[in-house]
Length: 318
Image (cartoon, rainbow, N blue to C red; front, top):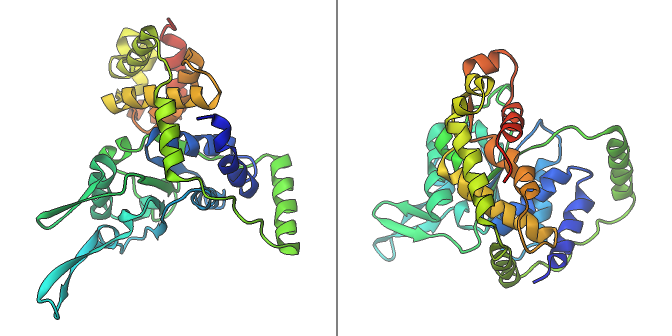
């Protein structure tokens, strides 16, 4: 497989979303690494548009769920329906049984609904009553959330955050990008929408995943990945400031995610081996939702990204 085979998907998403290269790279990385993506940003920054564009370019079922405070777990997983003609219950699958699920504004729903996602994201199955139902082989949750400072939002549980392979933060467009957005919007009003490309077949996607998984990682870089994650749990061994900022470190899922996503980034770059640069490029997206800041760091205005940049500067590259 060749990384250029993914160009039609990337080009289609880029035609719908101006700028936001980190978001597009994050979506493609999670797609090839077989993981879930959490996208955080203020309203109106094309988070939902990007996810819709990605689903248009892929072969598979797509479903969008608007998360609201009155959403119920059965609205996601489905429920048993009693059939009078058969005198028995029949399971009616919910939105989680689609290939691509857009969980829009995921942090506006209560804890019970968040809990309904845990089994699906972690074990790729759904349990209803006494029966367990497997999810499709291609199953990806793309969740958007607004900053917790906004009205009506909740902090997602740490257990759920850990099941997202990556978290990408979407920022405002630059001056030049916003001018381009205006021009694109005007052109859309004057002409018909450009049709999406032929959907990328699932067999091709699975072959790409296998090719990315075969990228070589030197044992010394495996050691570097473990050192980075271990440093979030034992920050005092590296730096007093780091220890003062970090309250809880990342789980072993972060170690696995760093290795998987570094392989994917190397494959997308056309490389057949992982370099330290590939690991450092994805470190923030892997770790920012898995490390917890101390109250002291939050009071000083320190962000998770500040902590991760200090971490990268302290842990030695082999």
